[in-house]
Amino acid sequence: MLKKNLILKKLKKKIKNNNLSVGTWMQIPSADIAEILSGDYFDWVVLDLEHGSFDLSELPNIFRAIELNEKVPFVRMKNAECSDLAQILDFGAQGIIIPKVESQNELEHIIKSTKYPPYGERGVGFSRSNLFGKNFKKMTNDNISPIIIPMIETRNGVDNLDSILKVKDIDLIFLGPYDLSASYGITGKFSSNKFQKLINKIFRITKKNKKKVGIHQVSPNQNEMKEKIKKGFKFIAYSVDSLLLQNSK
Image (cartoon, rainbow, N blue to C red; front, top):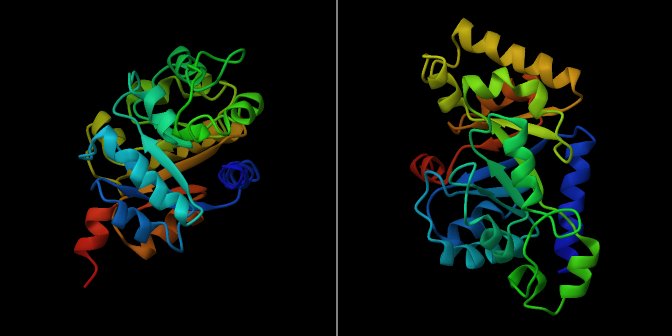
């Protein structure tokens, strides 16, 4: 448990220091796939509860597979009002990616639900996250919060980005390119002038607020990945399990 906390702190420090961090994305509920993906290159693995086919009861074993390789398990919530958040944290998620965040108040409410009292409203009890009570005292005393990353995927999110970035406890935002482009009527047209101008606008706002920008590089394309790094993205999810499997030959 203590080692898991050290690994989480190391990733938090990496993000804060503006160093590149690369992870990947899962939609297929398989501990074996999670163990393979977390083996070498990636710092973290995101389980996509919005578009994936995960059952909550499968999460602990998949988290164990990721932790076996000393990497950080993330979850992309179903939505910004996910009622399962407390259970997901109790299962051991160390990072939370929140889809379609559109306001400061919405984000602050979610962050409160990830922290133990007196800093938040997270329920206190024995769970896998504290080894079913063995590390209960240390976990509650340390009150180590998960990494919280809001996704900007809509026009409203972009319009309110300046206020969203004022929220305490976030170091970066994460762009969902497909939903974001769809919100502007240019679904999947990532090389279009309109989309590139939008990305530049987002970078200007985040730079002003001294925050970083992450993105999902969906296609397993090394050249596109290099371009995103060159552009300034510091937290990149590289591809997704299904595409990596399809392109394995």
